Amino acid sequence: MVRSIVIGISMLSRPKSPQVIFATTGEGIAWLSAQLSGARSAAQSARDMQLAVDQLRERVRLFSA
Image 1: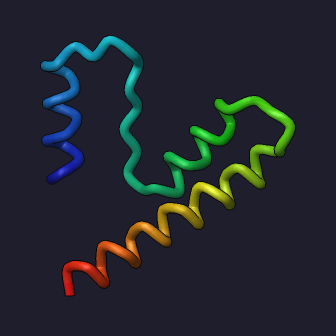
Image 2: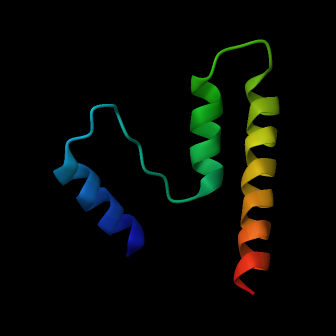
């Protein structure tokens, strides 16, 4: 349901940059890490992004408990 709302809002807002909405953070991270170029591999970037998301979620969980 939330994803449908986000998609509807993004379609109506006409963003200035392309937006892609994924069902899971894993799918989004895989796509984003493939888009990034640099010295590190896409796999390493994906692991780092997933770690950051996991840490943020844990902090939010602790804060809201």
